[in-house]
Length: 280
Image (cartoon, rainbow, N blue to C red):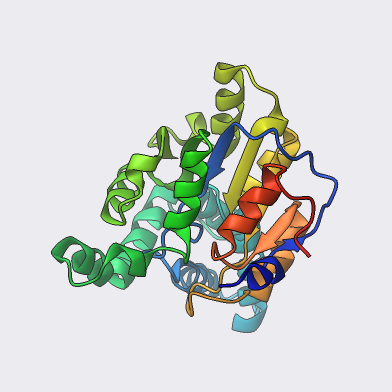
């Protein structure tokens, strides 16, 4: 990719960000680095819609799909249990008697496993190479950031054992100073908590934080502390190009920059670290 091509793939939403102060970099995992769980929304949304249709409220499948799609979009990045708590609330609001959210979480994870188990096995057996299961340019970006001497972390809404295992399968785990995922005691873990702890323990201001993510939560939490938020609007099915649905929601969440993947890594890092002033 030429420098001109790299620049054209970087959409600057907020040109007023304070560049050149980055010391810590936080990554979401699924959809930002890893593609192992590509399509999880196509598992979760139908499951939630099906559960709501069982109530026979008179709402059409299309109406419920729209409601659930917006809910899932706005909670992307949160721990899975919160989305299941949201399902329970929607059932209760419609006069139903919901099950424990943990029951819904297990149902969802079982359905998701059916979708991803062949990918996991292919990575474990070497039938598929790790680079085929990561967002394009991920290794190059991580190498560039490592060369800059920053500390890097993962914060995911997926259960921590899964995140650690899958980060090892795609061979990115060694880049990170910490890998954080959902806990059984879900109230003690969130991306917001991880961000606040990183800033507090390292005694650095929010402007020293750079976050890459494809969900509302990490973008909003980063902007709340004054950090830089880069939104990954990756088309996960094709591995290239912009997913407009993601792009619109990431901008709404407050993303400073939108990129399709990391093929623009060199130019993007030079810009964020203040080595160049423009990317257009």
